[in-house]
Amino acid sequence: GGQEDGLRSGTEATAQIAAFAAAVEAAEEGGYWPDMALEPDMLEMSFGISADMYEDYMAEMPMMSAHVDTLLIIRAKDDKVEAVREALEAYREAKVSDTMQYPMNLGKIQASRVETIGSYVMFVQLGGDTTQAEEEGEEAVVALCQERNDKVIEAVRAKLP
Image (tube, rainbow, N blue to C red; front, side, top):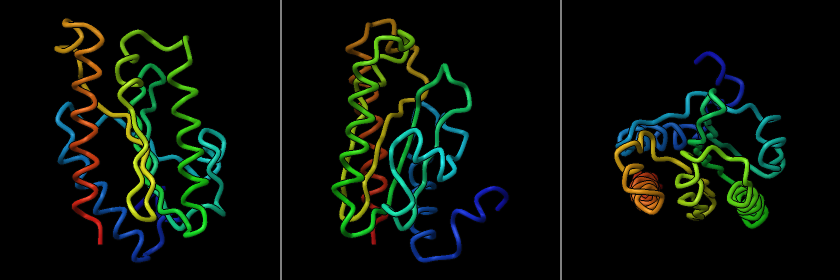
C-alpha cells in the first residue's frame, strides 16, 4: 500500500497493472531502476496524459535525474487510446532529440519505444545496467536495451487478459 492506495483502488484494472509490474521486474535483466511512482499530476506535467484519458496506469521513473529508465503502462479509455499513444510518441521524440542528455543515456533513449496492445499503451525505456555494452559503443547499448525492452513488452503481453 502506502502512496499508491489513492491511485490504484481495488479494481480489476489495478490487479492487471500489478500483474504487469511483477512480470516486468522478473523480465528486466539489467536490474529494474525506476523507483518512484508518478502521481497523476506528474503524469500530466511530464507526459501530457491527463486523468480523463485513462482508466488506470502504472508510471515509474528513477528518483535520480541522471538515470532515464522509465516505464509507463496506461490503460487508456476506449476513445483515448490514440491520444495516449500520440502523447507518448511526442514525449519520446522530445527525449530523442534533446541534446542535453547524459552520454551514458543516449543508447537507452534511442532504444525506447511506444507499444499499443489493445487498450494498453506502453512507453518502455529500460535497460538497467548497460556498462558492459558501453565499452563496445552506443550501437551495442541500443541493441542491448532494445532486447531488454522487447522482453519487458512480451512479459506484459503474456499477462494480458
